[in-house]
Length: 189
Image (cartoon, rainbow, N blue to C red; front, side, top):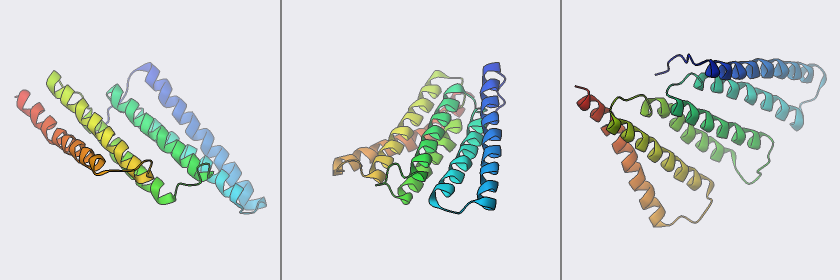
C-alpha cells in the first residue's frame, strides 16, 4: 500500500523527479518533432528518442516510488529503478554489446517482481520479530533475484551446488512470504 509522504525533504525529492519528468518530456517532444519534420530515421536519432523517453519513464517511476513508506522500501525501490535505468541506457546505446535483448527483458521481469513486493514485504509492523522476519524475507528475495540475474547473464560457471543454494534461498524467501503475515496476525490479536 502506498501512503502519502509528508516529510518536506521527501517532498523536494518528489519535486525533483517531477521536474525531471517535465523537462525530459519537453526535450523529448522537441527532439522528436525535429526528427520527424527534418531528420532521417537513422540509428542515432532513434537512440536519442529512446533515451529521452527512458528518462521520462524512469522519472515517473522515481516520482511514484518516492511516495512509498517506510523509508527502506522507498530506498530499495529507487535503487532497483536506477539499476533498471542504467540497464536501459546501456541497451539503447549498445555500450555492452555482448548482452542480448531477452536477457534485459528477463532482468527487468526479475527486478519488477522485486520492486512490486518491496512495499508489501517491508511495510510497517509493530512487533520486532515480525519486522525482523520481513527484513529477512526481503534480503532473501534480493539474494534470489541476484542469483537469477547472474544465471541470466551467465557470469560464471554454474554448478549443481549453485542451484541447490538458489533453491534453498528460494524456499526461505517463500517461507518468509507466508510466515511473516501469519506471525503478524497471530501476535497482534
